[in-house]
Image (tube, helix red, strand yellow):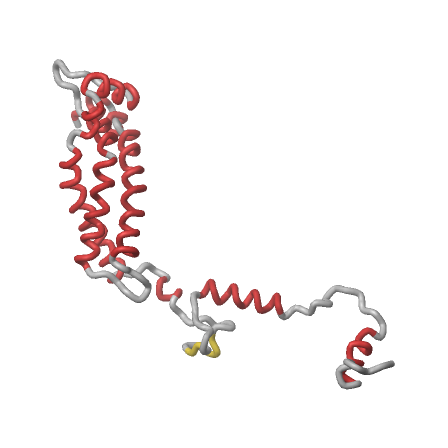
Length: 215
């Protein structure tokens, strides 16, 4: 209420650009690192699911570089959102804030609170992503069961029964069906027919292959 009375509704969004400056790089670092740890370090695959401890560890480790490397953005965001005390510099924009901090406090000031951010963000996102993975298994998204239904085209002989060697994702089976249709097309389709051409094609078969036959 104090912010609304003194700064208006716009004051509630003060530092929003700085939040984006911090959160977008954080996500760009965090989620690829998390996915890499799950797949390449812990060995997650379609046939192997990870336990809660492994998910917690992957999420916590991924949060460490993401939290520390985005500390400068968090410093700028904090300086913009916190009201300046008496004797302290006031900040008006991202560029002005970064220039003032660098000029008055040096480059190291951008990483103030970096270890504290790691101690907060690492367990926070570890539990967040582990909770998400567990709930995703317990509460599947709508339509997830339909994707697992047997394919009714070339990939399956009847509902619930697949032909040997014809299993695979639905998109793969559809692509293979389309390729089969293309390969089954007659190569002479659309070309004008030549009278007697079919008779000459059958001549080698009639005379036994035509290898040494003479006319």
